[in-house]
Amino acid sequence: MARLILIAGSANPRLAEAVARYLGIQLAAVDIGRFPDGEFHITIQQSIRGDDVFVLQSVSPPVDLHLIELLFVADACRRAGAGRITAVLPYLGYARQDRRVSGREPISARLVADAIQLVGYQQIVTVDLHAPAVEGFFTVATEILSAVPLLAGAIQPLLPPDAVIIAPDLGAAKLADRYARRLGLPVAIVHKERLSGEMVTASRVTGDVRGRLPVIVDDMITTGATIEAAARTVLAAGAHPAIIIAVTHPLLVGSAAARLDGLPVRHLFVTDSVPLPPGLHSPVEVVSLAPLLAAAIKRLHGQRSLADLRGYR
Ligand code: R5P
Image (cartoon, rainbow, N blue to C red; front, side, top):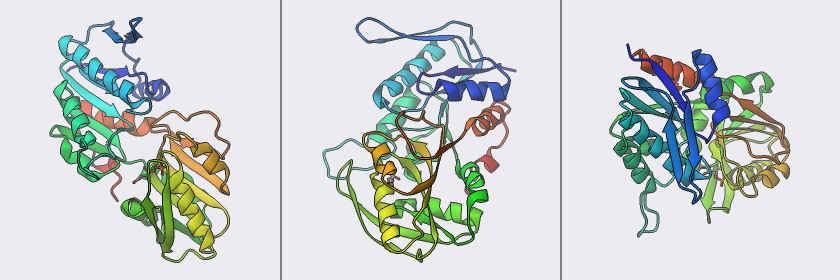
C-alpha cells in the first residue's frame, strides 16, 4: 500500500503539524524557499515515489502567494512520481467570485479550480466552501467538510434557552439552518446589501429576535462589515444586548478587529482554518479543524467513505 505523506504549505503550518500529530506521522521534509527576486523555490527533500500525498494549504491572505505555492508543490510532487496528490484546503480563497457581478470580470473561482486540477491535484478536500456552486467547478473528487458540528458543539453549553440563530444575509440562511437544527433553536435572517468590498448595509431582520440572545453564524469574517451590520440590526430590533458569533474562517482583515471591538461580543468562535491575525480583543475561542481533517485524510487514504464528516445534517 502507498505510504501516506502530508506536506505543509506555508499558510498554516500549526494546523498542518496538529493534523500530522492526529495521524501519527511526521510532516514531509519540504523546503519552501525564495530566490532573491522573490520567486518560489520548492524542494521535496525525501522520496515520495508512488506515495499517497496530501498537501495542506489554505488559500488565505496573502491569497495569490499561497495559491501559487499550492500549484508549485503539486508540480514538484507530480515530477517526483507521487502516486496520488490531494489538495487539503481548509480555506479556499476566491470561492466568493463564483459568478460575474457587473460583466467584464473573470469567474475567478472557476479559474482557481481549473488551475488546481491542471497542476495534478486528483482530489480536493475543503471546509465550509462559501458557495455550493464552486464544487461544480471541480471535476475531480471533491469532499466538502463542515465545521458546523464542531462549532455548534462548542457553543451549545453556553446557550440560554432563548437564543436565536442569526443568518447575517440570505446567503447564510442554509448554514444558519444547519446550526439551528443541531442546537434546537429558531432562525432569524438579516437582509443585507453589499455596497463595496468593505461596506454593507442591513435594514431589517425577518424572524423573532426581541429579548433573545443572538448567535450570528457565517462561513467567514473578512472585514467584519457583515457581522457588524447584522449585530446592529438585531440589537436595534430588541435582541438581548450581547452576541455570540460563530464563523468557520476568521480572515479578519482591515478594520475587522476594530469592528468587533465595537460590538458587545460575549464569545467569538472560529476555527483554525486560517491563522488568527494579531490585535484581536474579542473573547475568541478557536476550535481546531485538525481532528476533522485528519479523519478525512485517513479515510481517503484507506478508500473509505466520508459521508458522516460532511455535516449536512
Ligand atoms: C458573504 O456572502 C460571506 O458569507 C460573508 O458574509 C462575507 O464574505 C463576510 O465579509 P465581510 O466580513 O467583509 O463583510
